[in-house]
Length: 288
Image 1 (cartoon, rainbow, N blue to C red):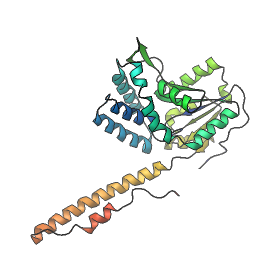
Image 2: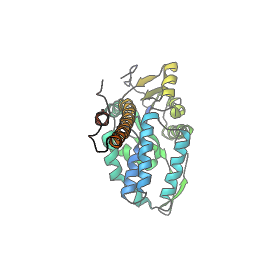
Image 3: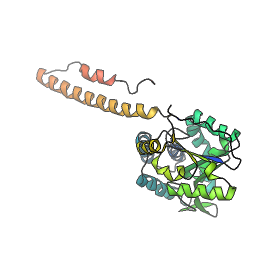
Image 4: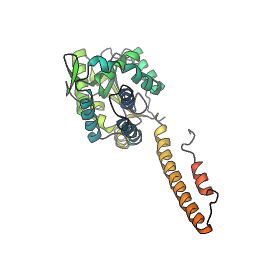
């Protein structure tokens, strides 16, 4: 773990600590678990679930982009249009089953230390306000900030009811919360993993980066911000993808080699040891 302190000091009673959700408070994307719950409830197709799983892997490896974030919001808006609030709330237990085991214990302990020191703690995410509030309640945070969807007559319209809490929108929502709750942002902390949360991090007096993407890590080093590294899986995933590709190429090469030998000898032969060996390649390395 790389850090320059990381532990909260004595608190101003008007201070708070804001925690991004995905790759900061929890491993990977909480959206994948919502997608699984939606699939099990018949709200999305199996193909959509598989595409979301692939997007989650890309997110673990590289983070997100503005274009992908906007596409997710549009897709979710379409999915929930005319769905009742009650119907989607009933997905909550399934979402929790997926998300809670992936909470970083170190980050949860750090959040509670802030709380014990007198700071209010909030989850701040581009995910829905419902997910933010649900996790805040279960994890004993003081509240959640998320993307609000418009509700008319107990059903979602598919339109937003406030800023998309991503990039500048998340910082705007935090400033609005601070004004409403009399929070001193200069005395407050913010934790995030992504360059897209730079507006959020610069809104407070004590920014801390967690599992940062390359650009945010560079900015943090230049500005002397604290850096916490918890997600060792990202490095193992990158190696796993590489080794899986090597294994696939080895398997394909072995199959071609075998087929040529069969044609030349006029009969079947044992499988190539290259293929067997490639299949035995490990897909992850032990933690250092």
